[in-house]
Structures are given as structure tokens and as C-alpha cells.
Picture 1 (cartoon, rainbow, N blue to C red):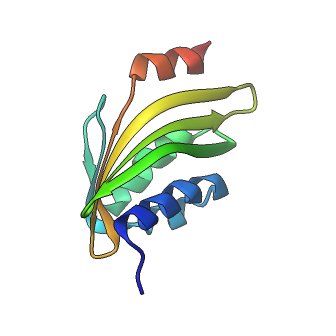
Picture 2: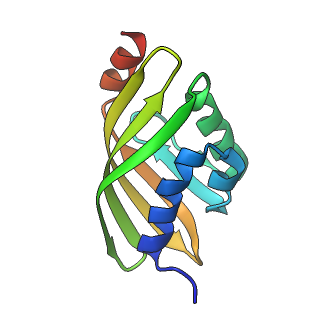
Amino acid sequence: MSETPLELVQQFCDAWSAGDLDAIVDYFTDDAVYHNIPIDPVTGKDAIKATIAGFTAGVDKIEFRVHHIVADGNVVMTERTDVFVTPAKSIELPVMGTFEVTGGKIAAWRDYFDMNQFMSQLAG
């Protein structure tokens, strides 16, 4: 039996701590859309992989701490703290995420967060 959309998204969030970008990208449909709301969306696994690689450069580890997760059919919402561990510091970013699951894969992922908060922590 395949996992529910909620279980799939929980597994996806848990997968970040392993640091395997290919495994993370495998959770997406080929034409998935990933949108960090403060910036432009990207479409397709290659673009998603490049985007994730770009914002994780110089990061030793990422952990998604899921505080709340709910599902309504194929839509899953998370309230989390994304933790970025660099050689110099640890950055904790509050995030709300919305995932749309189709055929056992993530077809759309939108994250809502304060880009200024992230950049100031990164620079500080």
C-alpha cells in the first residue's frame, strides 16, 4: 500500500537531514513546480535541483523541524522551522509550506517565509 500524501510529505521533510539531493529530488513529479514565495517559481526536476543546490551551497546540514502537519485530500500543509547548519553558525527559519501530491509524488511545493530574516541571519 502506498503512503498517504501526509506520510509522503513527512518522509520528504525527514529526508532533508540525510543531505542527499538526488533522493530529495526523487520526491517530485517530472513537471513539479517549486516556489519559494519571495522569489520566482521553478518548474521541473532539473530546475528544482539547481535551485536547492544554490541555496544549500556552503551548508553542512539542513533539518526540517515539522511542528504541525495537516492534509486535506492531496494538499498537505506544514508549519516548520528549517535549520541550516553552516561551519560558522546555525540559522533557524520559520516556514509555512504547502504541498500538492499527485500519483505519489510532489507536484507543487510552495514555501512562505521572510527572506529578509533569512538573509540577515546568513549575513549576521
